[in-house]
Image (tube, rainbow, N blue to C red; front, side, top):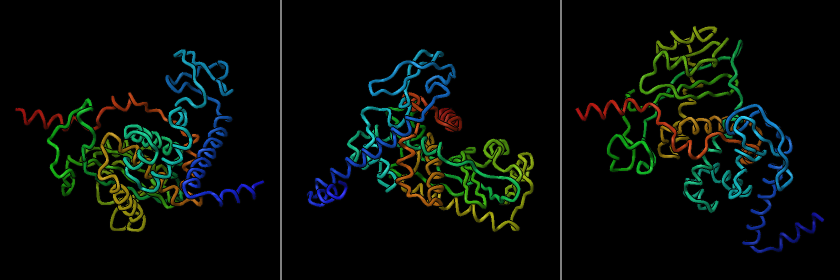
Length: 344
């Protein structure tokens, strides 16, 4: 039977083969989604977070539904899942995953998946949330060497400010590109980075401008407990890391080996971000999660597209579109202070 199907496929024309490939891709994604839904047992409501749930009949496809005693709404295994939207079937998500991994722009993704640009943007944000849930925990402890250092990224203030509730605090750059300032200034955002000897990476938004002790402590909390940490000459690490449970601190010039791991991580991160031509400060956490997932996939023996397609079939998100619109702009007090000073 299988041999005859393959022979029939060879006789098809070019356009029919493309249609057949897309059809099979959708069937594979649906099967992965069905396997994920079959083993889904909720422990909390995806909307309000309440843990008081009861079974509430079945859907049209025979899937189990639950009702939340907290908010009174019903849901199924597909609710708040990447494949839960009826307008975006499994085949569309499979094509979107392939486009994202191949480095296509968001407009190219929208054209390939036959969706609007806003829908493609929402799909990217939700896919990043699914990636974040699949990133393994950053390992630390005795015998694991860690390199910790921060890197600064220029704040490009990207986005459609005519639709956003928060308006642009300055005039748009005529060239369409962000202005890169030398050194560490308040126009940049510090990213706390760490890499260990096992190949794990850790990235988290720290503060605006030069990192403070409070910002470093909040970003690296629970990431260095029991490990020897190599840092640069910034004195903030020497003040903060002992309080976080670091077994020892090695500063330059005696820590070039492990410090090179995190410096190489900085270089890969900035090179990876260049494809987006600047990431809005409202969403750096999602893109940092994407980069960490890419680093994990780089060390894995599995194919990245196959891995992400399976994770997308099981993936879930928490940020709705209304929540994304109302999402506050981080570190915005500095811009508000500048606008007030110019008015005075």
